[in-house]
Length: 219
Image (cartoon, rainbow, N blue to C red; front, side):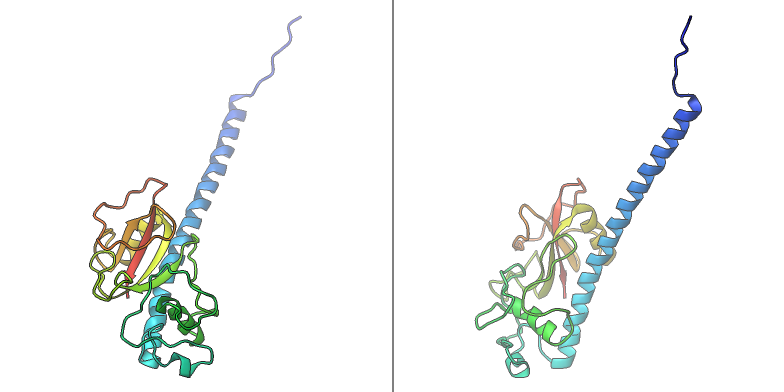
């Protein structure tokens, strides 16, 4: 007596494949939506800081961090030297509570928070959606005349640890998509929150899935 072997019919296999396809499509779509949300978040970071900077200048006729009247305006604040330069690098270790001798790139955040243009308290830099530091500096932080990231002679805001796909999208949306030109420029990272190079990057963005970039925008 023969025993009939049981197995899947073509219809059953087709249904399973359709279900798997739908699941994979949903996962990939979800990942893309998350990526797009992070791109919008990063663009909003740059735009929000720019708006806060110009709002502060308009109200107090001074640059946040460099403001020579901050200490007289707010109790516990520390004044800058008023020379038109935000001294210190974007990635300097900033204290939560500022004190005499704190870098002006840290006082920048304290001034903006005390004035209500940025949420929070203290001089610690905020983080972007990729746990990278967002900060400001003038030139390379060493002297006003030293250009930062090739050609940026004035104040810049930098955001670190940005994945390649997101970095390319940000530069394309906000500028020209070219890594070493325009108002938004990038550099390939080899370590988290790196110092800004003094020369413009000449190697184009490469979307490998593993490359990480720091982006800076002129204010």
